Length: 386
Image: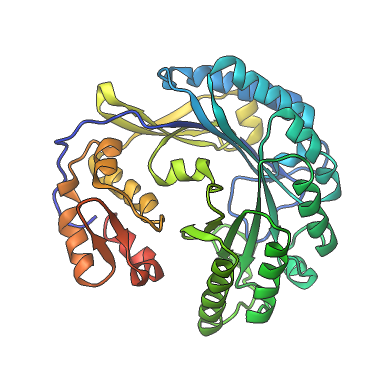
């Protein structure tokens, strides 16, 4: 972290609370994926795993501190490998143990495979009100290059089925900067997605991460100039369709932003349950912000749901907050920083003013946010606070 001093001359407040549920299995590990996911050659132990998730939540209830749960996100892996009955039992178990806010957003990630799409209506009936579809591309060539198990026809059918299944919101997850993808093909994917009339898009560039098959044998990706052209043209097309780019790679119609992810980006609290699940939780009475992690391997997690707790020091709180909040187009109010970290907003100012002088940040009394230039070089901006 930059050498600016950090002061704890502020009081922590309890932020909103969410629950993240991790289901670690998938049909096949994608070559670009660095998430905690594990191929399942046969059926997944959904009954045993839901039992373990409920035990995990029981052991985490002391973190709730009389708060209602604002959002639940079931991610993976491929959560849609689980039946609607398993998801219903999971959500019923959560609802029996904690209070859910009347408008609780409940998201489930799903893939477009035929087995999963048959379950969409059942998920809606189980209480899921937001579906996030891992489409990645509507082009067969790109899907094959990404190692996806679904084809282009299944991708389109999945969106149509999701929209008719009764969800309040459907997100389409798309990648760009794919092998052999130029501006025309990238825009074609966006045109297809926009044409369905969904109200939320996640559109982000493929990156090669360590510990993935692509890292060991990287495909040939578009050159930097092509990537820049795709980004500029894609953002313009999405904006012309009425979407607000409210976060680096998230686009939504008015009122349809993903509330669960907004809680992450504003340094809210979330209980993480499941194999490899992470959590972030606040203890105002101790002046602590704690990161939690669970066992990564599914078999180890099924046997024991213990948590590793890591209290964040002041520098880590500052860095973690900025890593998340600067992703938001509108930035953040300094009072939010103070309440969520327990640090004085003055601890930000030396670095923030330096970045402002470089044209990368806008620093105002009621808002700190990246400029257009700062958003282009977000990693550089954030690194100054780490």
